Image (tube, rainbow, N blue to C red; front, side, top):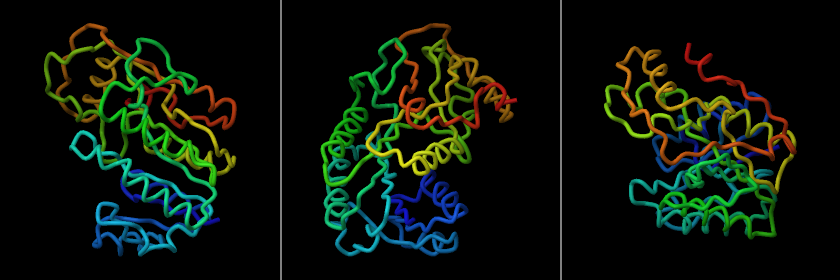
Length: 268
């Protein structure tokens, strides 16, 4: 099997390494020419793909694969959100042109508005932020396609190497909504969840991928700061808007068991 990963960044590179270790051929893209030899050194067939520069006709062989994983963030917070769906349209055009039959689109549980309840894939996300609406539009773009099957994976807040949660709020004071539950996932489970989708050939579905333990922010980040040797943040003891992200589709179609089941145990 050949898997092409569009976007070999924090998650994409980790996934590529796991796939290669499993005996899968991997093609990987980057927007930076200096990263090409780094990808090659990991056993990845490297490609330069800058979606901002034009179309993808210069790299048609990248799209000759069994599965395409799209792992490029919308960057809505940095003002690039409006460019995201047009970029994905270019990817979609190349995917269709080269006859790719299976796609994994990486999305985020940030698509869900805070609805003060538990939310699963069966619920309307009701996005109420710019980034959430961008993600919704991107998902709909791929759901509407009939020439290939798309599975959408919505990751929770990403933590792991280089994204240590203890640093997120260290030393900060009077942080609002301290009683709100966290919705997080570790890089190891991001990779493991994706591998499970591939191994189960589970295409045509949407999955929420979020560790099923949701401690309150004040407790989670205090322990994370302690683990990192940093001063604990101070949250306001209040519960405003919140959500708990769960999954019904994991149980139905994957049966994936998370490496990290309890954040307190992991943070010890």
